[in-house]
Image (cartoon, rainbow over all chains, first blue to last red):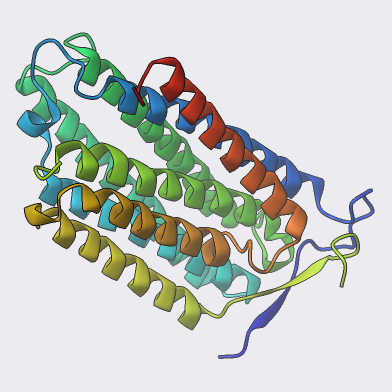
Amino acid sequence: MANLNIEQNEHEEHTTTGLNHRKMLMWAFLGSDCMFFGSFIATYVIYSGQSVGGPVPEDVFSIPVTSVSTFVLLMSSMSMVLSYSALVRGQLINFRIWILSTALLGMTFIGFQVFEFRDFVLHGLTPKTNLFGSTFFVLTGFHGAHVTLGIIWLLSLFFYSFRGGVTSERHLDVDLAALYWHFVDVVWIVIFTVVYLLGVFPGI
Amino acid sequence: MSDMDKTHSTHPSPRKYLMVAFALVVITAIEVGIFYIESIGKGIIPILFFLSAVKFGLVGMFYMHLRYDSRLFSIFFVTGLILAALVSLALMALFGFFN
């Protein structure tokens, strides 16, 4: 299928850069959020293996379960971009289906996280237990909060579309939400590798 | 077209989005598969970082449209990424992680 020319906004941008300032603000925010998560990931890495007592990652992590939740979040990114693609093509029904799917996949991911956190607490790991618990819950908790905020944003757009607030001519609102959603996905890509896979790999 | 007057961009087709999703799933499966090969030892670190970077790049370039949008958006994001990396390395050095 041929590529599609998409207008960035419904009218020419009369700004100093020629670019939409809302979109530029979103990219500036995402750039700053990189530093936010970078600090938490670095703190987790610094304190890994420094806990005086258990539980330690090997005691609580389940790579198969986290792999499935990672798959769910990756698929949510796919459905998000398909919802945006449907909107700019003027397919409002498809847009609603895909954006609702994205929100449901996001909720599934949060469900996995709640399951994981509950399991960890049952194993005796809380944010107050040791350095691993503190750094792990802060990092993944903030990521989960980002995902939750994204779900609320997506559902708002879904319901707003029934009131005529989301149209192919006004797709920037969805574009901004999509950028945010993909960002939480790329952050999880890093967390999955650094915290989970490298955190419990037995060969190191 | 310069960045200054760029108000239109070319975005990929849904078919390409699906291909990217397939690539992301395959790379994740490779990551998890490698995880169970203990004999790799510390060699797993660069391998996983490389695969993770590829996934990060695919999402950024195609799903976040950085490949098709204005270069200024990429500059904003990459600047944040570089600063994040520097902050992380500084923190790790400060706490003696590399000693």
